[in-house]
Length: 287
Image: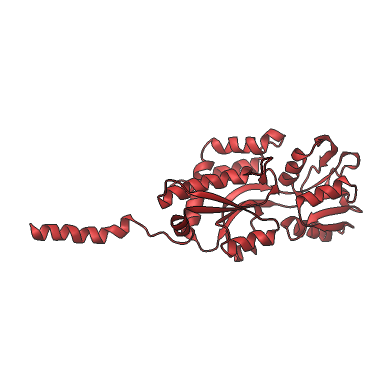
């Protein structure tokens, strides 16, 4: 009998690691501190922005809160504190992830190979393209109408790189005015100091929605770049990335992702594109 009990205890010792995986990286930090830190851009509606009460909100924020729930369940805590860290420039956002200031960045960041040298990305969260916002009285209806125009663009963004390449490839005479924030771009456009403001189409829709008079603005019909968004997290943190990807894949397999799209984007007149619909379907990865 004693020998039988001893064998059971030994079997239990050897079986324990298979049933309880040790937490690492971000998951361990959250388990130890009870805090999940979300980086976001405070002026990038509809993806991430501060509402009238100063609370972070938006499409990307909603996705990250869904991931936060999955993290809470994974680390075995009843509650975790969500801390929001405002980040502005692309460099600030990447550095915050690299230096572990935030656990995840939930804004409107385009996946690029050069960025993947520094950070990892989740499954794609959105797909858009670079467009140009102008005033209705002097509309820039197509990117082909940009020649001889002055266009504001945020320095260091993929939009900046894309429109610069567009100028070279098409031999257009376009003057670019470098800015640092969406707010600055809108101020220059409203004051007539630039002919257009270039950014991702979804970002421009968000700026128009926040304006007092939406009829003042026009967005170019076509786009000059391809912008696949995802959420940034620490490079090499595979356990946390799996939790985040699993949460997104599960969401994409339900009607809830369509409701989120409608709540943050669709209700402002932007129909879901076939490529975005396909992105959701292809990334609804099963277990």
